[in-house]
Structures are given as C-alpha cells and as structure tokens.
Picture 1 (tube, helix red, strand yellow):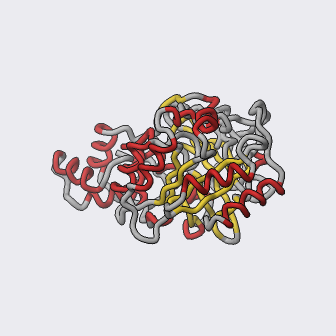
Picture 2 (cartoon, helix red, strand yellow):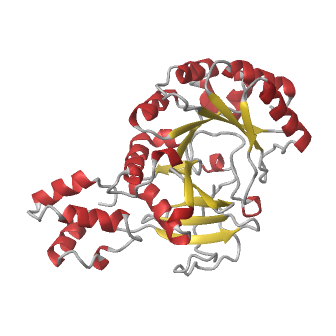
Picture 3 (cartoon, helix red, strand yellow):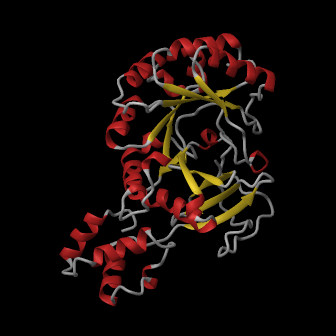
Length: 359
C-alpha cells in the first residue's frame, strides 16, 4: 500500500467496489501527511480501513535514533518492520537543508574508501522505505527548508533500480510529495546499463563517483570498475540523452598519496574532455580501519586549481557531521554506546534504539 501509485490505488478500489475518490484520500494520507497508521485515517470509512489492513502490509517505518553534530547536521536511523535500519542525514547550510537518502541496507559494491561497504548488502529498500526517510525528515525540519534530495546514503541506488524509480515517482508526483525532480540527485558508482535508463526514465540529476582516471587505481577504489571500466563508463556518459545545459556531476574522493596529485588532476581533465560536466572534490572523511588518509588542504586546493585551469567547473565539498560519522563515506550502521530511545514528537536530537545505521 505505502508504495502504491494513485492509479494502482484506484484499480485496487475498483476491485473492492469503493467510490473512486477514496484512492485520492488514501494517497493523501500516505504521502501528504505525517506517517499515519491506517486506524488513524479518520476520513476513511471503516470498511475501507479494514480492506487496507487485509490486502496490504500497512506497517510504518519508525525513526529510531537522532544524533546532532556541532555543525547542525543531524543523522537519524529509520527502522523497518524486520528491524533492519538505515541512516539518513539532514545537512543544513544558510537556511537550506540537503537530505542524504539511503537506498539499500548496506552495499555490495565494496568501494574501499566507504564505511558502508564493510557491511555487505543485507537487502534492497522498498519504495515506501525510501520515501519514508523523506517523510520523517519533513517532521524534523520544515518541508520548505528541505531544498535538495541526494541519493548518496547507504547503498548503490542503481543496484535497486526499479524500486528507486518508483520512489522517485512518488516523491515527484502531484499526488505524491510534489518535489521537483530538479532538486533530486542520484549518485552511482557507475552501473552503466542502469545509468542510461535513469536518464530516460526520470528528470533527476546524475552524479558519478569517479575517484580516478586510471583503471588500475579505480579497480581498487571502486571495484565495479572491473565490470564497467572507465572507457565504457565515459562512452556511456557521452551517449546520455541529456537536455541542453544539464551537466553530469563527477565526484572524486581525494585520498592522500593515492589520487590527489596534480598529474591525477590532469588525467581527470583528459578523461572528461568534451563532456558537459562539473566536478565535486570530496576530501576523504576518515573512519577507523580504513587505511586511507585525508589529503592536506594544499593538495586539495592544487587539485581544484588544476581542473579549473583545464576549464572544468570544480568545487570542494565541505564535510559536515564528521563528529557523528555522518559525513560522506562514513555511514556504517553503528549505534553509539549509551544511546537512549528517541522520544519522537518534536524532532529534537535524542539518542535511540539498539539498532544501528550509518551514512
């Protein structure tokens, strides 16, 4: 039920001989109000509520833990009916908030600089489990302040393609959450077949985790490169049916002594030559046992300057929430010792549940 489109709700209502407008009422409860138990959908008659309970899984994900960083970043766990959890992150900046959304419990891609990769893949998230993260975030922050939605949390979004696209439909539809697709970005490690489908099936922005312009380096950092090597990935990008003025974002996690030199920047520029791109540099956010180090500011600035000289629009991502393991690459489903149950309601940071999640 909580992953259904308006048309599917109408079709279901017809099989139950319910009045057609009941579908719109149900969709309103599912997507335009705070998460609500079926019993609390008070304008639906009892027979409709009973039928929903009989025909669908009506369970609600719950917010299990909130932690707040000194910089205002908030990370929360969403716990599902099977007690699996994911991490979602609210990142504030100058009156705007970016929401970092998870698409899987864990991840199978084994990127060596990402803490989530150490979890392995437990399962894909269902569309309503993806959407629920946005709905919970809306309870924690005023919806008008949620300005950007990025699928850069736990998991590889394109490895959960069909559910991802269904979630995007719910997020962007007028009968759903009504979010402009221009505010949504999907980040991928480079699953080539699904990449073209995403551009054809949606109007969201695309970001690709590149890491290096050298196959031998990328093979180690992002092992999916062994299946879809750089030339195949870049050729696919050149063939994407992108609208004019729309760019692909390439994300480069900079690791000290691995991929942060000026020659590395030159190789990136050569690889991306002729593509409409922008580059986002992400100095590595360290976590225990990673084996990598964050490069110094001098190396990061030199890398950025080199790409700018090549005519590539390049920005450096300012890490937020690293003190609560909420920065890019740090999500690892870890519950802090001494956590207390989140009391919900006001959305203020608490601590919570013996489950664990990370982003």
